[in-house]
Length: 405
Image (spheres, rainbow, N blue to C red):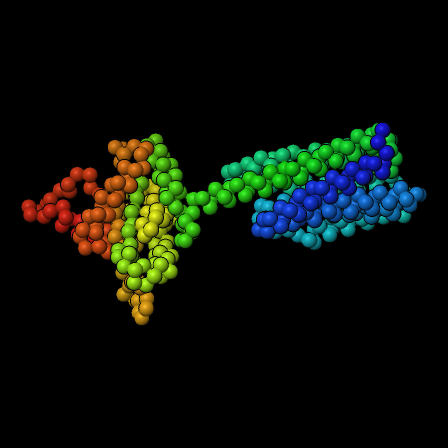
């Protein structure tokens, strides 16, 4: 059977080791605010275990256990605060101090005014369990349609800790010593179980952080560094999804392919820094003319695309006109060293013949883009798979494209 000092020593070593890991994570990923709370929680729990160990030195005094218990409850609150910050929720220091303070007051009362081991165990168990119970929903509920495996593990472990604390409190009522003051087999079993669960709890937090960081890296891989909009990979991924959705439902969607007119001259005359500023400025202008759900992507150089879900060719032409108009208005207002931006846009609509192949839709929009440039640039054109009807004898397809510009 393990002695009480040995059990508490294992507690201290466990929390110090995990705390050092979290300190490294906190230093390496400063934007992961939850790591600060989890680091503080581990070191605070180690301090609580050290204070409880002083019970061996101060024989007959319950003060070390009182201090250690209060600190351990505070550590549990810190861990729960880390969970809230991980999910972007505000933390309440008032609630933390309230739980810790009321638990401490309860322990003092059942030591100094009404000596009762079962009630002390009950107060401590509630103080330890309450912060975890308040975060169970966050851990076990899907967030943005995604269930974090680490959060699920942490939620299961939190539920087990709550169950053990409840069983411990009930056991003391019926005469089973779980008070952590004697080296009984029941106490040793509960302590070892809590040590194991505390490690699993923090392992769940680590998995949560790894999943979050992996998703952030995946998101960065889909973003253009200069403009912050989607890149070519992101565009192809979105087009593949939209093609598959339209193939199932038959509902069309549209694509705009955009090219900045004369952009090479901007770089040659004003330098690449000015060219980058033009790309960023165009991105901001174009986004003001898009609808919720539309996606702007930079596919390379001065080329952009806009995906318009659930949109017909006519609606795509409307968005294209908006983008051309905002660029024209901005150019008209340019003064001094301002660089006027002009764009050519090709518009195409998904059709059954294109199926689930995004490259076919891109090729169609490119075809319309070339027609727009051929007609004089700074305009848009739509892709017609067949020549448009000519209502009056001598009108050509090229003339029809000009009418759209």
